[in-house]
Length: 158
Image (cartoon, rainbow, N blue to C red; front, side):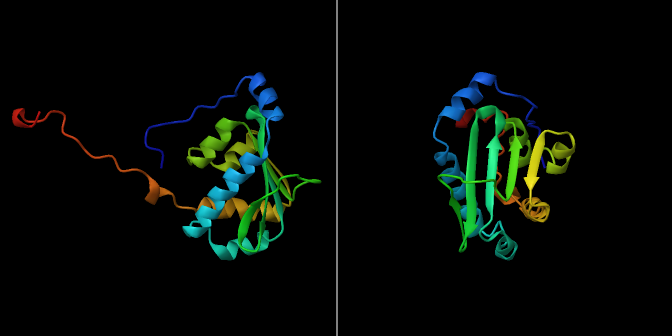
């Protein structure tokens, strides 16, 4: 699936996380839930697999950026949680590089989990449901198609 570009394993310097932790976290949740709701509208996430997620709480924490997004799924929409209380039903924690590798399908979440680069905590059944749902997403239709250009143009077309 990867077309020659690979995302290396990296970890941002510690000061980035210390700074990121001091920033408001709600914008991350708004951005993530907007993207998830768009994926539902584009039929990338099957609605029948979303039903077991009803009223469950989720946390996505990007360790080396200090950022996190808390959200829930309720009444057909992903919704940000502006002031999380208690433990989420399901939490994903990893460095930015691991999340980018999963998103680009360069790495499988199982591999990152077993290599201790991705932490998944909480409801095991819910975790498997989310993992399987994300594995089934086909993003190939959204890859940009670059035009094929000749190496040189005929003299009259320069």
